[in-house]
Length: 110
Image (cartoon, rainbow, N blue to C red; front, side, top):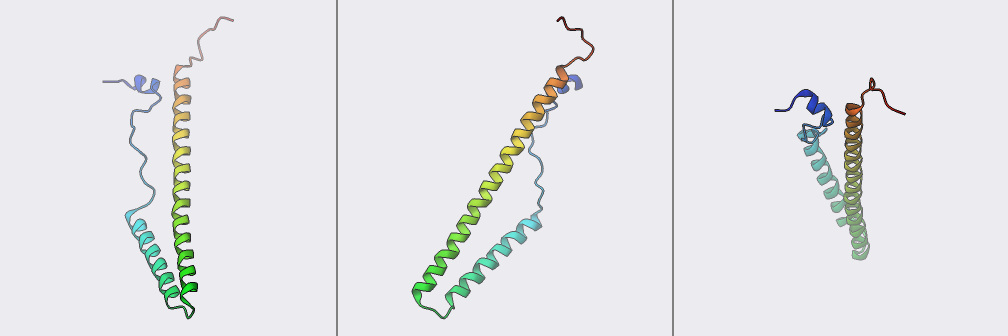
């Protein structure tokens, strides 16, 4: 069993559980439904557009390109946020360790 002082010396990093997600299940469902409705609406709009098949195909590919690039952008933003979170947690652990090891009342030989 570790003591509170031992936990402090280890940088207070006794709980390695990830932080809770800031979004709720309802928000996630709303986002999925919103995406599905918007994608289907645009697809139906392109399908019933009074133009030739080549123009419809071009617009359909454009919509697919926008959707896939949106997923890629969202993944990049998420990865960057995770990286910053991990980096800040490591930096905080190093700082906690330095502060725990520092004794302001010790006399140092110069």
